[in-house]
Length: 94
Image 1 (spheres, helix red, strand yellow):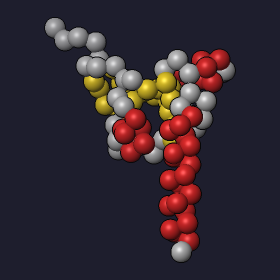
Image 2 (spheres, helix red, strand yellow):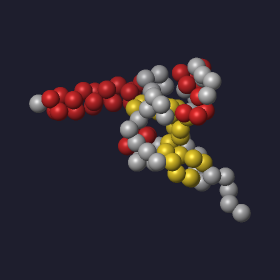
Image 3 (cartoon, rainbow, N blue to C red):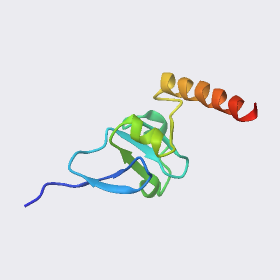
Image 4 (spheres, rainbow, N blue to C red):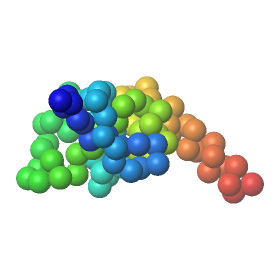
């Protein structure tokens, strides 16, 4: 008999089954990830939110799948992501 399986998003953005639950949650529609207890996500749960909720094994996987850090619960990570995005944008322009 197998244990519980968790649906996670892989680095390629595809859904995969895992024996280990995800450590981060995200919003598929908004392409944002954050802590599982994020007040922004939990406090503003619209009807149908569960349909767009995704889970990640770790931060590297979320970033590789094209998601960005939540500005509320992951402030430092979000700031670093913005700075990196600006640097990459400047490189594309020049």
